[in-house]
Length: 328
Image (cartoon, rainbow, N blue to C red; front, side, top):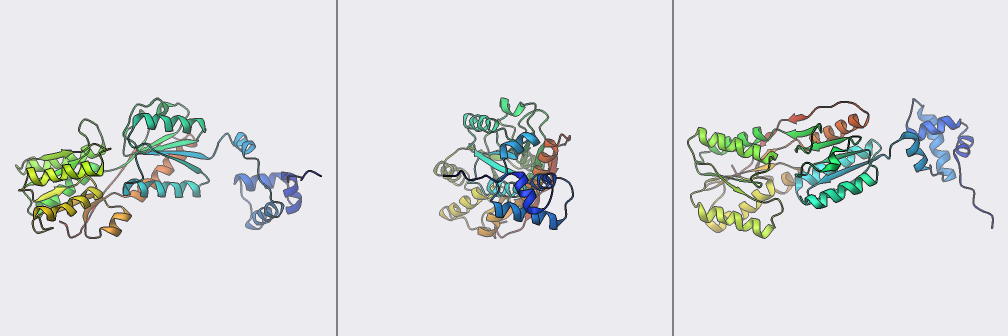
């Protein structure tokens, strides 16, 4: 049986009536070419069922066109929207994405990181809580962080968490709340959520009111988290305002409130945090602090591309806004 001839670059050039250089430029998106020429080359590749030699192209460009992303989880609406938007932007710019969800487990994150380095990704976007992992200090690896400081000289794209804490707390104070409780992440970690807590404590002290924060571990189960929220109502029946760590927590608290005789917003006012698309769809009545998630994602991709191209970039902090609902 005669072996099937695998089409080569010169075969495409001959079929399209152009030079091999022109075909190469179409494949690598280099230089200016007319739409007519590009269409001719693409048509020839399709008719010949031409498949470019990916490894050869990678060696030529010294890039893999792969970007790695490591985030805690896609279960959280904030992270799921963030990852989806970044993947969309990266794909539009010619990159394929490898995603790892670390569940805030340092060992799992380190494992994902080493796997991504093995695949020789062109860059990384990370939004995890763990700092100081050796892989992030890889001298030749461009890294951009989301809302977290993960290493020296790694630019961070974040929203103004302190401003968000001020907006949420002030809203509850303006609504007449005097027994405001805040839910937050684990104490002892310098995370963005602690900036929100600091803002909450500042305004409570300024108004001569007690600041009470319930700290929850990142990996706490839904059942255990509900137990903590029940403690809020049992230990502080006087509570009239809650500044929740995120919108999903706010939703759980809203569902529990009626069991403790709390009407929302008459007896208890609640402000969430994140304001993602899913939350706004499923909980349109929630008053929440909205992070510019899509803008953060787009900016992270821009900074990563700049770093891949050898440019210096700086960290960026974006403003947040309050979405007015019926819970506060």
